[in-house]
Image 1 (spheres, helix red, strand yellow):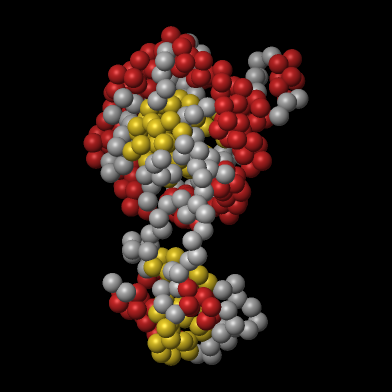
Image 2: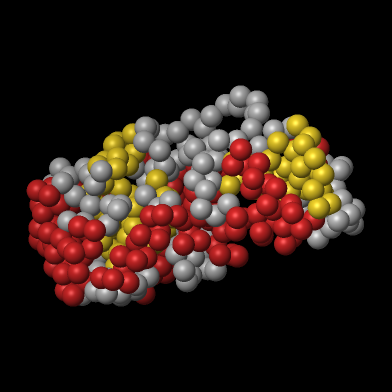
Length: 364
């Protein structure tokens, strides 16, 4: 596409942290994460999902390891995974040690759930010895003390973003004491405003890489908007080194949404189909929705970046056609086909998709 040269986002340069063969932070590209929803102890199912997520574009994948069976399976999975794996550890420090021994590239740890600081220090020592990074994170739901009503009343009178940053700083004391700095930080909320405020504060206070996310974002319909509002704002300000857009259900749409967000902000080089489609109106003489869906299916396996515009009339169509690799401007029962702004021919409605795909292949 012929785009004017625009200013690029000036990113916050964080401390580089190795996560397997990836570098997180520094001047490395923002990475995309997802999380498998299989039982990790089911090696076959977990590897199948890892491979699907990696093929979709995931740079790292997190796995839950709540049981010893899970960490035992993790050792087999790590050996066969195409991307670095993160072990999600919550209550049992033994799982953290086992995950490190199994070859996890990073572990996700909430020190608030492991109150014995001797155990936390053992995890830090094991991670240091193995060259494993640790993500230390807080979520909105985990920061308010529940054991003491006076503390709870005090906490609830304060802003959640301030509480999350304060709690995270409390967790980080033990890592500072141990001089361990291969850390990635996160502070997630289900609320976009709270998430933005918390990460802005973290970006000012620390130089560690930041993992961006909105927790409990819901379905793809709600989660896409909430995540784009929070993560898009932060990324546009240069904040964030790795992202996960969280949806309930199948994790594959998480990866696609995450990549689209980074592509839209020009933080990653786009690959595959970039589809431009008109919003449709009363000027339409052809139902372009089935054509759009068919184009998406036809280009599903393409990794080379190609821009296709499917326009429903000649009002905005020629303008988009001039800027796209391939474009069609639909009329009644037919469409005009363009390649990089050059008008080629008129094609019948039932041949539009085949013509678009053929021209894309001719681009080389």
